[in-house]
Length: 369
Ligand SMILES: *Cc1c(COP(=O)(O)O)cnc(C)c1O
Image 1 (cartoon, rainbow, N blue to C red):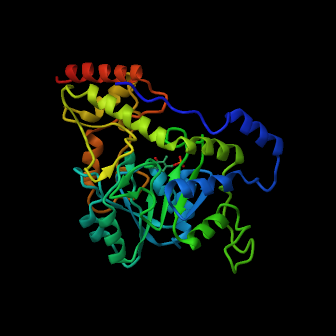
Image 2: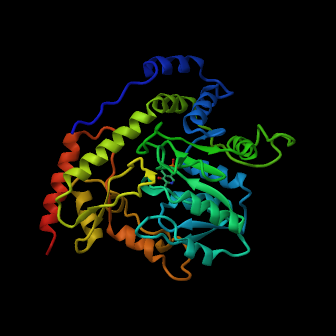
Image 3: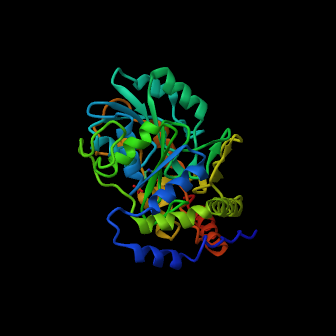
């Protein structure tokens, strides 16, 4: 199998950057981030896009725009990274960890329902590894309980389910442009929303309330600076032009690696449902070997980067950062104990993927005792 090659950008990036540098320093920030926002809205089919400095900042602005503040409870899957939770802390809100269904990786809505209280204000689905939960179940749950939905779609650019794009289901969908995501600009992020009030709040919030929503005075609130720098917006625009190709390449890489591992002992590919067009962010394999987490760590040491082995990903509710109350989220723990999620970049060639497959197969065969 041959991986498709990637096209270049709209114009040589050097030309674009030289033009931009000629205009800097521009205290207004220049129009680059605004151009990016128009193109993002168009590419994702969302009425509004707001560019910010990171995925974390996108979540922070979106939660603030949804009115989340001190003492509010927000349902968050335990099956996520700390970056989802940090903005809640910054707003004085309380994360309430919800379990996941280990088969589908989707939120466990029975557990979520048990954790709703009169103080619950929002739910944050996280499309970890690009896998998107059931949007119908999410929307039904949120409207039954009167909750805002802020999607953490940082890993989910390009995923769709039932024709809905990840990041366009909730009140706001938040993306990261950090290196390592499929759509990248080095650092950066953005949010998508259909609600003009959320877009206006996020625009004010990312720049110290200097450009307030209609009817409010500039600088009438304290906010933050999380603007996206123009050179990073330029990189994002060049990459956005090749978004479809970037997603196709990731899918081809994932197919290639999973195909090469079909006969490997103790590993089973973890496939999405037929209704999901997965962006294939990370090849996912369930491990049925003894001490699976130790195996993932062993692979990381041998140069096969993966979520649990390289980044020690554990369920958020098990982190010492958070107070322990109630029962641990067993579904999330089970997923992270047994999942090998291989970390890819667009530069990984067939040779790299074949090397990963050879190492994984050899080590899995030797790991049985
Ligand atoms: C990368 C990531 C974030 C944070 O994005 P930054 O741009 O690094 O702030 C949040 N959530 C998830 C699931 C991520 O993968």
